[in-house]
Image (cartoon, rainbow, N blue to C red; front, side, top):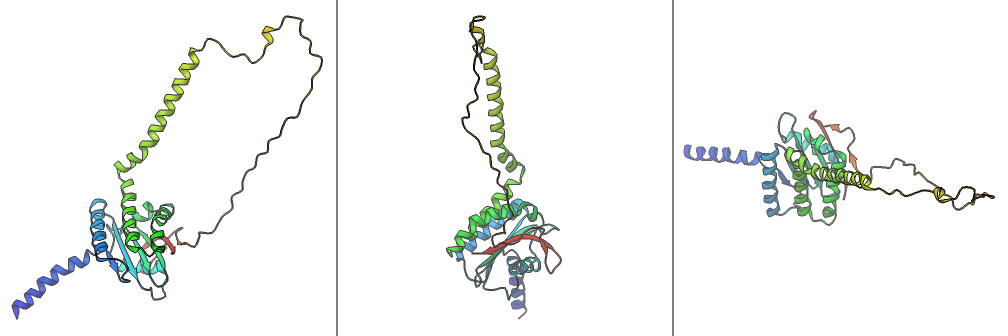
Length: 251
């Protein structure tokens, strides 16, 4: 009996860390087992490399709770996030209402601004609409990893490289034009005055001829709606007291 209890204790100690490391929760049964394994591996690599958490949760419903508050509670009370600021991001998919929400926390609020989240949604939501949730989840994790890479010193240098090349080309072009201008010994004349013999030309008539008109229009921009997205702006605070950002919508 004591040996059995000891064995169960060892198994429990092994199981608890494994449960704590889980980052993909497919309660709505939208993902394949192979995809879940692939996602867990990719998320683990992101966590090790960037100290940033990524969580994916699919649920059949939210018990009439707003998706953003459900996502916040799931993240906060699940103990997710790195460092004291709980840095991370969570993708919530609700199958019954076909809604989603991307939750950002800690440094995730700064890295994944509204404009970045809209870009990620553009890459992920089309797969959701086709009910290809496996691809949607994989693309989401890939997009998160790519955005985090851009915030490393090497990533920022790579992002600036095309601009540095463009600036170099502009400087080279300007230098070439300057040298070219200095080599010219003959200048184009704007009038034929120097070719007219003194007293041989008499201008007797001057007339203005109307040729065409040019109209310039300036568009006045008006504010538009958020296109059905929720969240964003200044963020919100979950029931745990932790501040979050993010937004979502329907698919």
